[in-house]
Length: 237
Ligand code: ATP
Image (cartoon, rainbow, N blue to C red):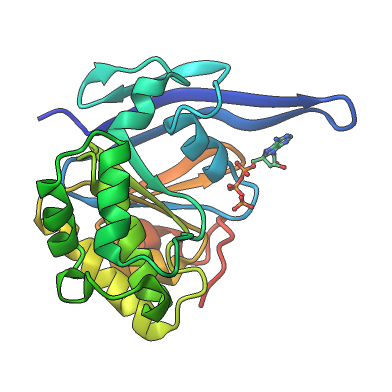
């Protein structure tokens, strides 16, 4: 089976009058295999957001290749967005809508069959609370609703950008259970983070990025053992 995502030699230079040229990605490579939770770890400013925005078709890279399930995808085109589901900002929902109403509305707008709403509610463990208003939800539950909405279109890859931001330890544990459950259900998740502990707790494998280049990758335990005290600066919790 081909990798869900394969990126090779990705290049991105931002140019602005004030700051001149800034190389954000410098030949970046990454491989995410099917059914895994893959951590994308790197310090602030290392190029994670630039990579994710490229994956979502929001910005065009200056060079490199990207394939989804072995199929080359032209970067920055709308078809990329349909195949990659993402939660990249703090989720905002109508507080007086229930999770079921919210997802039904999104499904209708996106041309997704109603049946899928029940499936995603089940997948994220919100089925029992699906008819309650979102304003009664904890932050962790809102995160799960955001995951559910990203899953509506059955994406090949689910991207989560700093999902544990603002969550308490209980919320982080819930997030871990959810990620593991999704992987067991055959989904592939890319989790971007600058927190080593989060990646260690949740992910199977990891890619470490520093200054726009991949500096390490592989099974989490091996990579982190090799890099303990090494040249990669990550915030430890
Ligand atoms: P963070 O976690 O802080 O968002 P990051 O790893 O996601 O960091 P990027 O946001 O991809 O890193 O930034 C990589 C580099 O590109 C940084 O040096 C940043 O200053 C620069 N950069 C990012 N966006 C722009 C932009 N729109 N214009 C100019 N430079 C940018």
